[in-house]
Amino acid sequence: MILPLALVVVVLAAALAGWAALWAVRDRPVVLNQLWGAAVVEAALLVQLVVAIVAASRGPGPVEHGTFWGYVVASLLILPLAGAWAFAERTRWSSVVLLVAAVTVAFMQWRMLQTWGIS
Amino acid sequence: MTESIEPQQPPMVETPVAGGPSADGSASAPHGVPSTSSGPGRVLVAVYGVFALAATARAGFQIATKLSEAPLAYLLSALSAVVYVAATFALARGGRLARRIAWAACSVELVGVLAVGTLSLLSPQDFPQATVWSVFGQGYGYVPLVLPVLGLLWLRRTRPVPVQVTSH
Figure 1 (cartoon, rainbow over the protein chains, first blue to last red):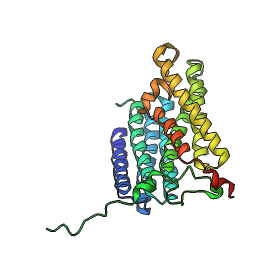
Figure 2 (tube, rainbow over the protein chains, first blue to last red; figure 1 turned 60 degrees about the horizontal axis):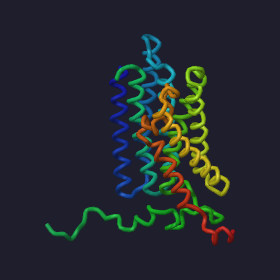
Figure 3 (spheres, helix red, strand yellow; figure 1 turned 180 degrees about the vertical axis):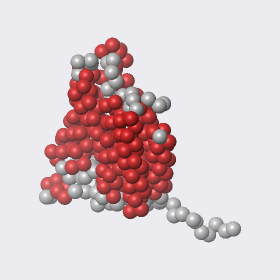
C-alpha cells in the first residue's frame, strides 16, 4: 500500500510539474486551476499520511523512523506554502516556483520510500 | 499550408524582463531598493525555503535524538539550517537590512559548503553522518553548492542604484 500510493503521488506531482513547466515556457503565471491541481496532490499526500500511520501502527513501520515522518510532514507543507508564494507573483517565475515545489514533492516520495525501507 | 499563422507567439519581449528585476520597474520596491523576491528571486526564495525546511527538520531531529554520535556534523547541520532560514526570510523581505543579512547568510553558506565539502572528502571519519554540505551537497544534487553563488549574484544584480536611494 505504501509503494502504490507513493507512485500515485509521484505521477500526480509530475503531472503538476509538467503543467507548471509548460506555463513557464509559455511565459505565463500560475493560474487558479493549477492551485486546484496542487490541492489534488495535497489530498493524495494526506491519504498517504493516514495510510502510513495505520501501516506503522500495525506493522514494523519505517526503517528510519524520524527521517520518514520528517519527510511526511515536510512534504505536506511544501505545496500550500509554494502555491501561495507562487500565486502572489504574476510573471512566468510563479510557474517556475510551482514547478520546483512539485518536483520537490516527487523527490521526497523517493526519499520516503527509502526511509520506509522499500527501495 | 502557408506560413502565415504561427500557432504560438514567440516570446520576443521576455528577455529583458526575465534577465533583471529593474527592466520593467514593477519589481522595484519603494524607496528605490530593488526587490529581491520578485522575478527570478521568487524561485530563489522558494528553493531556499525548501532547504530551510529540510535543514531545520534534519538538524532538529539529529540534535534531539543523537547529538553524541557526531556532534560536529550535527552542529554544522544546525548552522546550515540557521543560514538557510536567514537567507530565505532576508531574500523574501528585501530592503537594506534584509539585504545585508542575505549577503552574510549566502557568504557563510558558500564558505560552509566549500569547507565542509573539502573536509568531508579529506577526513571522512569526522563526518560519519551526512550533512547538507557533505561532499559539496552531493546528496542534494549539488544544489547547496550552486545556491549561495546564485544568491550572491542575485543580490549583486538587485543592488540599489545610488541615485534612486537618495530620492526617497
